[in-house]
Amino acid sequence: MLSGADVSVHQGHIQWDAFAPQLDFVFIRATYGPAAVDRKLAYNRVEAARRGLIRGYYHYALPGLDPLEQAQKVCSVVGALEPGELDIVLDLEETQHERDKGHRWTQDDTLALQEWTRRFVREVKARYPGRSVILYTRHNFWHQHLGGSAELVDCPLWIANYTYGSDPVTARPPADPKEWAAWAQKKPLEAWDPWAAWSFWQITARAVMPGVTANTVDANLFNGTRGDLLRLARLEAGPPAKGPQPTADALCLGPPSPADDRYVVGPEVRLTDPGPSADGAAAFFAAADASTRTAAPVAHAEVTPVLDGTGLEALPPRAPDAMTGTQFHERARGLSLSAREALFFEEVLRGNVPSFLRRFHHVTVEAPDGEQGVVYVCADYLAVGSDTDFLRMPLTGVTAQRVADACGCVLPTKKLVKDIYAASRKQTAIPFPPEDGTRMATMDRFLEHHLAIEQRRIGELGELLAGHKKDVVVTNRLRHHPRRLAIYGFHRADGAPWQPLDTSLDRRLPHEDTYVDYSHGARLIGGLMALGPEHRRVPDVLLDPALCDLLSDEGVIRAPRYEVRALG
Image: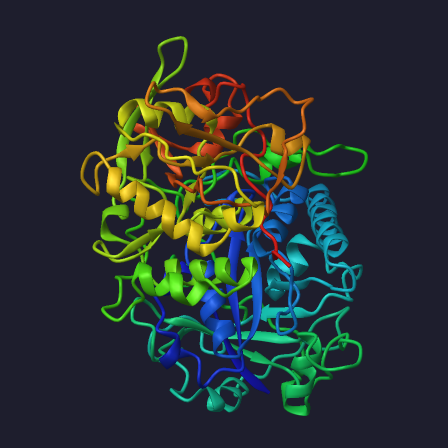
């Protein structure tokens, strides 16, 4: 057996140099519910890959909400799966949230949840041809709420079953992960019908590991050889195994009883955040079609947010030896577009951003009817380096969205760019003369424009500055014309934008979302906004016909984001 772990934002900022060496694989939380992205996904993904671990990404399911929307979300956030990455994981462990009292589970509910699971799995498989979906669940949940369905037997099985329950002392495995298998098999585990064997076993949530100080860690075993794991991760030739064959000491005499199926659901070990919930299973099943038991979306449902208005404070501190803007320019100038944007993304996740970008400004927004709210806005466009030597970095729409997702933020709308400009220390755009299109997208041109901005900058770094770049924005046109780029702004001295944006849906946006030139900038907006004493998720406000005018001059925006994928 091989040893691994699963991690999320609950483990805080992991020091991967200390954490990774004893592990063979790691599962990383990617998403939960229809909209939330784990704040540490991007950082954990990059660091795990850098150290050669086999990686998997899991989605925490909220069965009270649309399965297709959740499947599409995790696929969009994870993007292309590379060799070394396992199939997407569906984490099924709850039917409804704790505050939903009084709902009694029925056979009809079981049929509906089976259909919910099938729809999620079908959608993910369609988006990853040749791949499957790993199912994470526990014995009692599967049999009580899914009826032991045999239809998903081709999906590798990941069982949560804690050998020593939840006791903080006895449930702590040996310090050496290579000893976990012998420790766990004092209460051996067998799979249940229809699976011949389990693939992964979560043996405890109480592992204490170097490199993780914020919490304990979920420890896992893989029931197979190194070759089996490499095949599952598409790193060795041959078809992926349907599931490793069970070892002799992994078999029980009988299925575990409810008392044996000890699964801790405290906030420190759960695969999701505690907090505000969806309306729960009752809303889902009420919306299900009685004849087919298929799920319908629940509008404006609240999910536990990872988006907030605290700016970039969640990033680690900038290291003393981190690259300056000048050094970044020198390193990136010979790289391809995809390589330089990957390098920028990694630097941001390492905390290599100027300190004046870390705290966000409050900007008041107003709808035509007089309703007001407050959004949280980054002081300037994304940059790399120190306060005294930094470089504003133009980004493609794809990478701008990746950075926003990783930081718990969103990208602005056209209306937000207008509101930010009105509230800012206004800068004047500096357009360069038309030239060969290739040079407009070079690191040298990026640096020249950055230096020109600094020479003419009005106001101090850390003040809200606007007008000096074309903002990468979201619009309904992205939904009607996928994989295109929307930009707006770059203001003249009279306040008019050089770069307009027509929001009519019949006109195709001129650039692909992988296009970038020196004039572009990516400004982050906090993922939550204030509406009186309450906070709402910005994407939810954009979906709400009664509130969307606070942020949009084109009505409801149903898909306010770019598709995150490999740049090629």
